[in-house]
Image: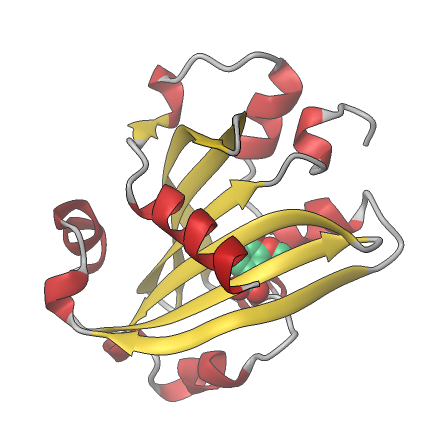
Amino acid sequence: MLNFRLLHMSALMSANWKALDRQQLETTTQSEWLRELHSMTDRLKCCCVTLDVNVLGLHQCEVNVLTESERSLLGNEACFVREVLLSGDNMPWLYARTLVPMSTLTEQEEDIVYLGAVPLGQRVFSRTNARRDEIEVATVVIEGKTLLARRSRLWANNKPMLVSELFLPQAPIYHGNC
Ligand code: VNL
């Protein structure tokens, strides 16, 4: 699991993000998935019986390890990092890494640190004042396979977080069967 995590995390961290509209996508199904403004959790849940969240990492990072684009999307702040693997009916579908600035983890949002196996999207979109913007897309090559990745900013009560999602080979985004 450590290798899996390092491989996918470094792929996301070195991805060449481009605004969604400027990225050529193979199918409209793929672009519909990537354009999702609401909860990716809900979309994935429609494609399986059980959606499991496996927390791979939870730690803090200092502002100096954020990239320039991360800082411009979130502000200059230390963050809490949550990494998860999402599986639909026991198939690995999505690796996600979320940066949550410390100032987002206040008041109603304090619980985000303690979500555990509750999907972040489910938590954020079950409350009012949730929205997503700044959707960007990248392709990354992992073990010879070209995979789609998306980065977007989520807002909860006007406080930002940055979600990066890597769609693994078995994810429904590639199979058009959902
Ligand atoms: C999480 C992050 C869940 C990104 C997601 O979808 C996602 C999480 C279910 O950290 O729980 O797209």
